[in-house]
Length: 207
Image 1 (cartoon, one colour):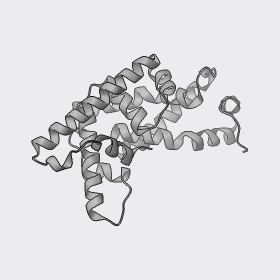
Image 2: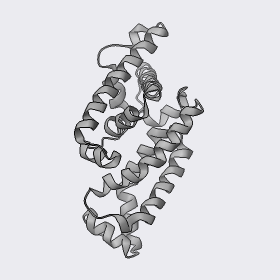
Image 3: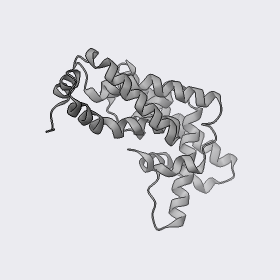
């Protein structure tokens, strides 16, 4: 079907238009999967979560009133499912010990083995640090810095004022940098940390 705006797309989906539903999934599928993967670091979990999220979207489309962008509304539905999975993994301690396999899909391979190894190290440190943050900080860091959501989209999804989103993001970045610094010093690898390491790690995996 031809490109239509989000409001018209949601309206068409509510009438049972299969083409419109396919267009909606195509438009937001990558974003939903990316969010799910950043919260789970498991392909199978991310795929399952994505299916659950779109089922929830389908079941709740009649409630979409257009006050927020459709993408922000979908993220708001996705949020609880992703956070519940994230918190469960933190309780199981399976997220704190980030594996090579879990970060590999996030990396862009190059012909430089040393660069690839450094990128992998930074990415693992980043997700280990995120796992140590309080949920109120980690979820905003993931949504903004890894998934690229706008401040107003995050505010709508988390039902927070824009100012709160910005202040929590500032705290999340500061705490993440502090944790990464501590981890590199503890591992006696000071060369792995330098000013800008956090920004480079985030840039390497951002959607």
